[in-house]
Image (cartoon, rainbow, N blue to C red):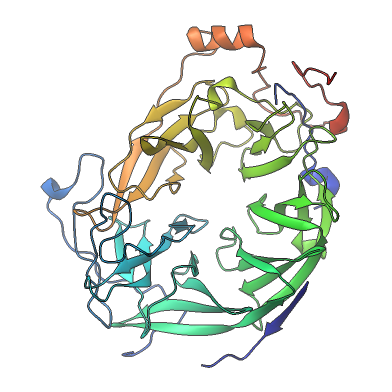
Length: 460
């Protein structure tokens, strides 16, 4: 793999991250780029508020050109461009929940084009600000909001990936070019989730033998090469509040099982093992909560892919709840309730459920041992949302009536511990052993290969 930076475009320690696991059952005047000048929020009568707590339809702020949102048709592709595919990451939310960003297809039906759109999520009401430039964007571009209101955009031209910051400037859109990273020899570049520090953005450049970690925003001189991790890495989950500990899923050079590892960006890219449920299992990290230490994991240690949970730094085994494997649907976690200090079992987890009828939301807590399946607002930007500390789930949506909306959903109440049919079923199955309310203050990790694999059948 070869990856290099092009500048000047126009205009933790092992003890910190070790997880013991192993149960089976398997134009105008420009504002300063860093400013947070927002258009004045319109006054809304109380009756305009929707039952979910979101505002009714309103027009987004205008930019250089006329931006006329198109109504999605029944196929999910916006009208006027049936051949265009929506971006893989439809909606990304900043680490602090202040802003969201997406690419959206808008304009007259005969001249529709893709452009970035920023949503303000932490104000009195949500509203969207379009950020179009002179030319429409390609649908495979990526956008990522920063905590100061600017939006990072990644564009690809051949083997070069360029990065810029977009921000509203009165009636227009300002752009601050950051430089580019060139990937050759078949290297593949992916944008990581928003950094917890709110100001930085990182990418992975995956080559044949190693994966490079680049900081493309938040540095002093444009894109900066941080470290090379041996093997082919994917995923990407932040383990701390400072944006220093990054977990990635690594496939060894020459092949082998995929294992999540932690990369300490503050210590020169030091790599330490994170998940190793069984020697030959593929163990991937999907989500992590820095407050409680709750980890959401996908592993085939039980014999096939299962969704499980564990606690960072704990010597308790990973659990694979039966309720997280409903029939005929795919379940993917996308948000964990913050603020539950040292109480991982109390965290509410939001999950995207995909089935033949579409996509909807599931809510689950480790202590509750029950998957609540809930309807979503029409036009939910599937797989996106965030929790408040008080257990309210915010789901962004857009449809023909509401161009920028956020539905509020309170987490359902679980049955009392040890009471009800869900607890009786869990006791009989043995698949959901309870854990301590708080992890031990001092705990010597057990090598994951020696952790108990309850219910696993040895190969014949």
